[in-house]
Image (cartoon, rainbow, N blue to C red; front, side, top):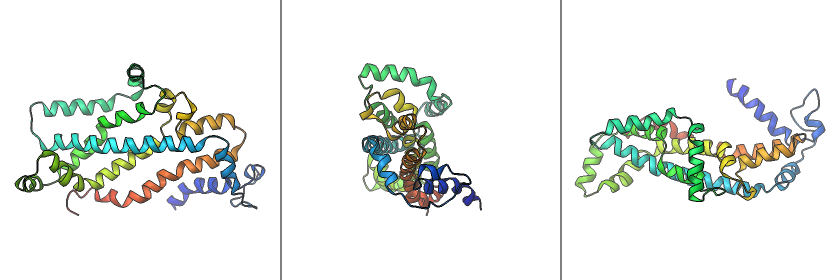
Length: 257
């Protein structure tokens, strides 16, 4: 019953995309359209360069996900498996960055990326992901603390160095947690509006979230095209979640399945 309650608005939106404009705003509302207008999606998609927006969003999402997985897993492995002077202090400093809202660092980052000549490119949206996220590092570190050290000792006996242990031993063990981090990053980056709005100026560089916002500004009175593009934007995160949800529960079991 709870699932139906939360799904009902999305179901109504989905069926409304196949109605005419007059039928969509009719009262009392109807769930199913009298005539199924599948061409509404084609018309809405071709009204703006949404193919370009979609590809930009895919590029940013894929590369940031790869960057977060590689950097966060490597840093978490260092914090979880190495004992060195100042480790706890560094970890506290890392966690303290979670208390600083992005709005505070927004202007310094803009100035930095402008000095690099990256404004109006996708680099400001991609490169920071390769330096990790405090929240994801924390999740992976806590996960690795529950993994027995015997795996590492056995790998060293077999002649693995530190990077080989991280890549060949711990990365497969961390797969459920890495998939969870990937899903969280996909949802966050795919729906990000403020970042592209600040760093991107040319419409050919727009992501789908920014393109949808500008599209709404042009078509405020045309509800059907807005609903069609909104449905298209929802589909990729939903597919990613459905594909990876079975691994999320495994993330709580450590290295023992």
